[in-house]
Amino acid sequence: MSESEPERRHARQCVSCGINIAGMSAATFKCPDCGQEISRCAKCRKQSNLYECPDCGFRGP
Image (tube, rainbow, N blue to C red; front, side, top):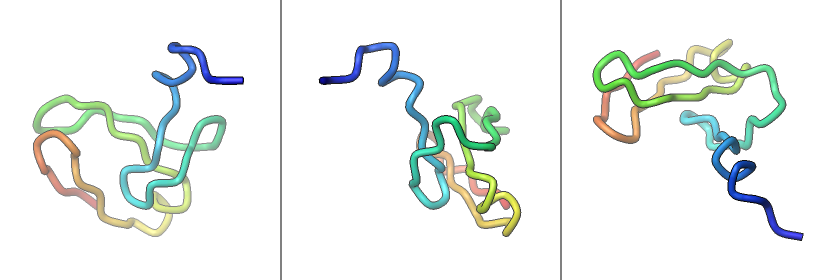
Protein backbone atom coordinates (compact mmCIF):
# COMPACT_ATOMS: atom_id res chain seq x y z
CA MET A 1 0.00 0.00 0.00
CA SER A 2 1.48 3.35 -1.01
CA GLU A 3 1.20 6.66 0.81
CA SER A 4 -1.35 9.15 -0.42
CA GLU A 5 -0.19 12.58 -1.59
CA PRO A 6 -1.26 14.44 1.61
CA GLU A 7 0.57 11.91 3.81
CA ARG A 8 3.78 12.38 1.83
CA ARG A 9 3.56 16.15 2.20
CA HIS A 10 3.27 15.83 6.01
CA ALA A 11 6.16 13.37 6.38
CA ARG A 12 8.90 15.34 8.09
CA GLN A 13 12.53 14.64 8.73
CA CYS A 14 14.86 16.19 11.28
CA VAL A 15 17.09 18.60 9.37
CA SER A 16 19.98 17.79 11.77
CA CYS A 17 20.01 13.98 11.85
CA GLY A 18 17.54 12.99 9.11
CA ILE A 19 15.23 10.71 11.11
CA ASN A 20 11.51 10.62 10.34
CA ILE A 21 9.83 12.74 13.01
CA ALA A 22 6.18 12.23 12.09
CA GLY A 23 4.24 11.73 15.33
CA MET A 24 7.24 12.55 17.54
CA SER A 25 7.77 15.42 19.93
CA ALA A 26 9.57 17.68 17.50
CA ALA A 27 9.88 21.38 16.73
CA THR A 28 8.88 22.91 13.42
CA PHE A 29 9.73 26.52 12.73
CA LYS A 30 10.48 28.91 9.89
CA CYS A 31 14.05 29.64 8.85
CA PRO A 32 15.04 33.07 10.22
CA ASP A 33 16.48 34.07 6.82
CA CYS A 34 14.17 32.69 4.13
CA GLY A 35 11.05 31.38 5.91
CA GLN A 36 11.44 27.73 4.79
CA GLU A 37 9.87 25.30 7.26
CA ILE A 38 12.50 23.46 9.32
CA SER A 39 11.82 20.46 11.57
CA ARG A 40 14.05 19.09 14.32
CA CYS A 41 13.70 16.05 16.56
CA ALA A 42 13.64 16.38 20.35
CA LYS A 43 17.06 14.74 20.72
CA CYS A 44 18.82 17.18 18.37
CA ARG A 45 17.10 20.14 20.03
CA LYS A 46 18.11 18.93 23.50
CA GLN A 47 21.73 18.41 22.40
CA SER A 48 21.76 21.78 20.54
CA ASN A 49 22.95 20.04 17.37
CA LEU A 50 23.59 22.41 14.49
CA TYR A 51 21.13 22.60 11.62
CA GLU A 52 21.28 24.05 8.12
CA CYS A 53 18.34 25.35 6.10
CA PRO A 54 18.06 23.23 2.95
CA ASP A 55 16.99 26.29 0.90
CA CYS A 56 19.30 29.16 1.88
CA GLY A 57 22.07 27.50 3.92
CA PHE A 58 21.37 29.44 7.15
CA ARG A 59 23.00 27.64 10.09
CA GLY A 60 21.81 27.65 13.67
CA PRO A 61 22.14 25.80 16.96
